[in-house]
Image (cartoon, rainbow, N blue to C red):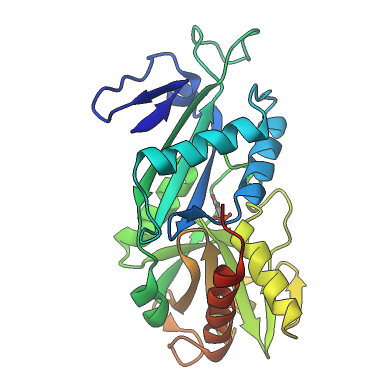
Length: 283
Ligand SMILES: *Cc1c(COP(=O)(O)O)cnc(C)c1O
């Protein structure tokens, strides 16, 4: 069952309106929420970010937070997720349907769509790490908005795949920003470095959890931009996201980072994160 524009529908019964602005322009916003053991992790944080993204694109959400929570909870229930299931919830809101013009039609009504999919945690990959490739950050200047307009992200991810790497690390004129759909951290002399949460990166919820966990456990965190030279000389690199959690990047452009294996700081953070999930109140 999916939730589409006020209705519960079966897969296969769907039609996208030809002039839905999400479809025509990528004009809309979204969230991906982790479900651990049948319950949502950090739902409040995702809701807060969704309303912020909406504000930034001049979209007035007609739903109260409690209404969106109800939709999410019903999705979990109607899809029979149990405390055995790890999953992800995808929720998108397009600006709505109207004759195709670029400016925002007045009186347009947003269209919401949400679904859940079972999704295992990437535990094996987290033990092995991923390879990465440096790619020019060809995205726009408002990467802080979680928008449906993801062609830049699609292309940079595919450049990495085409070159045989698992993820792209993006840079603007040599300054590292983030990855295609995750935030990036470097570890140097036991401290963490990551790009500040400004317009150039998405303000990841996992990024913030990792920063908080690190600080609580005596690991220094510097929210400072760094360059390619610093990246390549890092002791460890890792990315963070809702679905990838804390993923080590063991090589960049074929050159090993540190000793080319998942390092001690990543292992420590993964263990802290595991504990944090288990202690979090899920909804
Ligand atoms: C969603 C996303 C992230 C990670 O955010 P989380 O809230 O941790 O899932 C990072 N970068 C980009 C570009 C994203 O779209």
